[in-house]
Structures are given as structure tokens and as C-alpha cells.
Image (cartoon, rainbow, N blue to C red; front, side, top):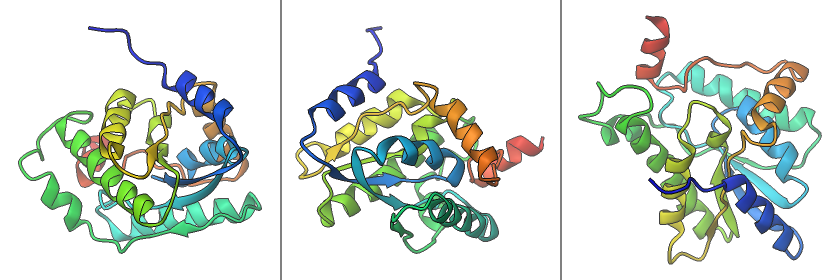
Length: 202
């Protein structure tokens, strides 16, 4: 097995090479994970948040996370657009058929990463963004290497670039916890899908 890449170092190098602010479509999974990512990236990018999360299989949970994300942006005093594609959990459930019994962190999660990043990449490409990426890597429970490899593969031969990242680094995850407390954010204990919710309730 080769050496794992240092995605945070790659991001630092890329940021140092930027000539002015670039447009970034940042896939947002929830307000707590987005908090540090926004705080960190807003100095270098014009950010638009993209809340595409059909894995959230309960409409009330989906609406709660949307409301918290919008509140966070407002209370941070930022002029950041939050794009919310139509909610359709069937998009997730159809895609992961056959993987319902997979453990958390397995093939079902990889398929979910790909689904959300595919839609993010397509929106970024269609709307003239320079970069796209996801807040998901801030979680210590998400596979950073898998997320980055999917994003890079999607961006290949496209007119939009994938932004390499490992947002948990440089104290990112700890800062997101701190910001969640400062803004009194709803901090869920499952990713959103019915399968992770059931695992938490066991």
C-alpha cells in the first residue's frame, strides 16, 4: 500500500497558487460540518452552498437541517446562497439497492458519496463554478480518500476542478464542534439515512 496523500497540504498549496477569489460550489451535508468549512474557505473563495442530500430519508430531518444551515449562514453575517435541489429520497434508495445490509462505512456509503458528488459536479459545471467539493471530509467517520478519489474522477475532462480537502485537519473538526456550540446548532448523531439511524438506535 502506497503512502496516503496529504489532502490538506494539497489544498494549502492550491490556495497559495490562486490569483484572486474563485467560485466554489461546496456540497453541504449539515450546518455543523459546514461551519468550519465556511469559516476557513470564505477568505479564498466565493462560496455557494449546495444542500443535496437525498440520503436523508425523513422529511422532517431534512427540513430541520436545511433550516439550521440557513440560520448558520445568516448568523455568520455572510452573503452566501444556499441551493436546495428538490428533495427526493428515492434517488438514494434506488441507487443503493442491494447494499441495504452493508455496514456503515462500506459500499453503501461509497455509493452515497458518489451520488451526492455527481450531482454537485454537474451543477458546478452547468453554472460556471471553478471548483467543487464537499464538507463530508470534516467527519472522522467518513472515508477521506474515497471522497477525494470520487471527486477527482468526476472532474476529469470537465470544465470544473475538484478541490482536494481533508477538512478535519488543522483542527477543523474540533473547530466545527466549537462553532456548533457558539451558534447552538442542531448536531445530529447519524448521517441521515434510515440505515445509519437504525444503527444508532440499537
